[in-house]
Amino acid sequence: MKHARILIVDDEQIARENLDLILKKEGYETLPVESGIIALQALEKTEFDLVITDLKMQIVDGLQVLEKAKELNPYTEVIVITGYATVATAVDAMQKGAFYYLPKPVKIDEVRILVRQALEKRSLRKEVADLKLRIGDRKEVLLVTGNNPKMESLKKTVEQIAPTDCTVLILGETGTGKELIARTIHRLSNRSEKRFMAVNCGAFNEELLANELFGHEKEAFTGARGIKKGLLEAANGGTVFLDEIGDMPLSMQVKLLRVIQERTIIRVGGTDDVPVDLRVIAATNKDLAGEIEGGSFRRDLYYRLNVITLHVPPLAERKESIPVLCRHFLRKFSDAQNKNVVNISDDVSDMLMSYEFPGNIRELENIIEHAVAMAETDTVEMRHLPADFQQLKFRIASRRQREFLTLEENEMEYIAWVLEQVDNKKSKAAEILGIDRVSLWRKLRRYNLDT
Image 1: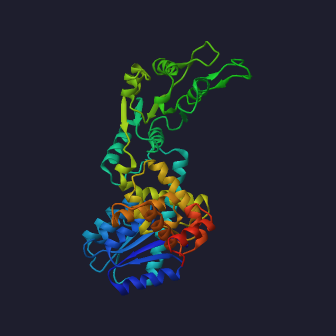
Image 2: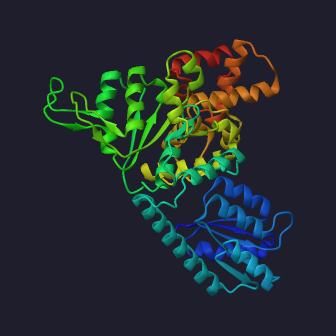
Image 3: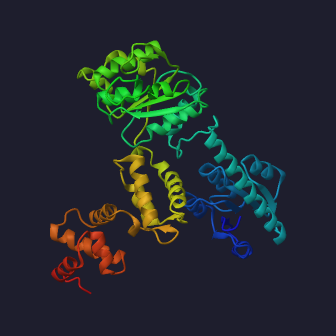
């Protein structure tokens, strides 16, 4: 597995450099670091295929590095090396998921073989996991928690309720991943071999939504040349996910209530009951209790949906998930765009961790997709982010210096900052600023910034 990324952690310079030299000669991408603390930081930012770590280190030892690597990515293999080998520490390391426990002094040929075997094991495990994911393995849990207590609790609840057949209502802001949670429930349920059908209730008017959900009979309306099954019928035996249920018209709510109670549907233009066996999962970003008081949502339907309620916290309340999500999106869009963007710079990482993400996970995904498209190296830099994010970085820096700026001062300092970020390249600066080169030149003359 050439071009694999390997993290080398050892506080002994000679040992670290020797391992680095050996592995580089084998064609691997390596990152040697001198402490466990730096290793943890590196693991947060980059996905490694293999970690080789010394056991005895100050403050953060090799076992802590091992635990963090496995927590962030269970497919990362870890080789623990130590000059103080004992049976107890070896057992502890293996129980925590180490691939191998290697006593010092290490032998070059042994290291080469172990690295090759560890990477082969990782590759095989990843292939098996991907295959299971494609065919719907029930044990695969897709929720990213990032050690956030709210998300850990949500994940446990999902695992607990998934095997049951109860109706679930998922509440959360737009873009928080409500459909992902619904898909995870389906994947872990006894219905996982059947279909998962999703429909956005706010995307259709009443007539189109009825046709989408219930289907129609032949000649039910002009152009209906034959019988069409709706999503509810097509999902028979499986799960239907009704997103933005709070936007469903009242007349449709009555029909949905009947489906849940009677487990039958009537196609548009039809009179016969068609039996359906479904699990219903609904989601909304609205306050349904308030909608009930306002008369736009039926109380009886609410109680039917509200058997189990899951609250999904916004991304701003689970920022521990951001590094993990960033790595996931980097892999996703690097593969899609045939690139090898694997890192995020410290500036970008700090920026993302300080941002409130009103658009939640969906907004983060869009940011990373844009950054991967713009990146010309393996690392996402500030200049690769959308223009409004670069402005946000500038505003944060400005506020740290002083509380208020005049409009002219704001524009002048921002133009100067953009020029600094792009190494004084006027064309690139004009593109980021959204103006042409002539306009930029005039502003530079006006503020005495023409250098």
